[in-house]
Image (tube, rainbow, N blue to C red):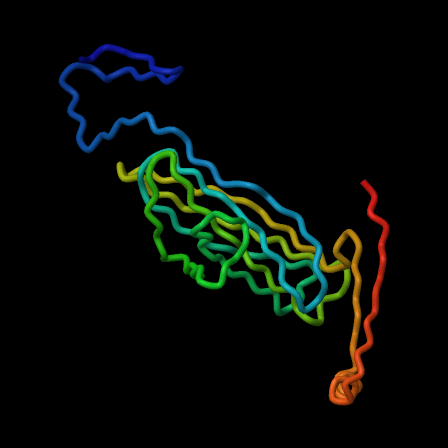
Length: 193
């Protein structure tokens, strides 16, 4: 009592004898984390998905929110954060959309997975970008809190890799099927590896 101490590089020196302190809380809480950052490319009028994992360093609750900055300022970008309850990294039909006030309980060492769904405006020009900052606001059971962020950059353009598109005239397809004519088309692509 009343003596300086040092724990893991943290130092404290109490004031003079007779000082009174109230409502002090001491704890050594492991840090929480929120990751990863993403960069994706998408066509106008489509959506991309950015999975993230929050790892809790203590018992508590976490809330998620998203804010974006578009460049150029194109209207119509939309972001939604979903609770990826099974931590699959994909959005399943039954997984709920989270509102900023929705608190999810998490134990120390536990994980909360979320997926950010980013909708690209149909009229967005190629090269347009939207930078989304997703914030995880953590409140520990002991009262301490932290805000952690990740960023997701979506650029309008052709996704990388091979893109195949095929269109079918619906009227001709219906006539062909009604007439009982079946046309089988095959395509062979070499597999390298």
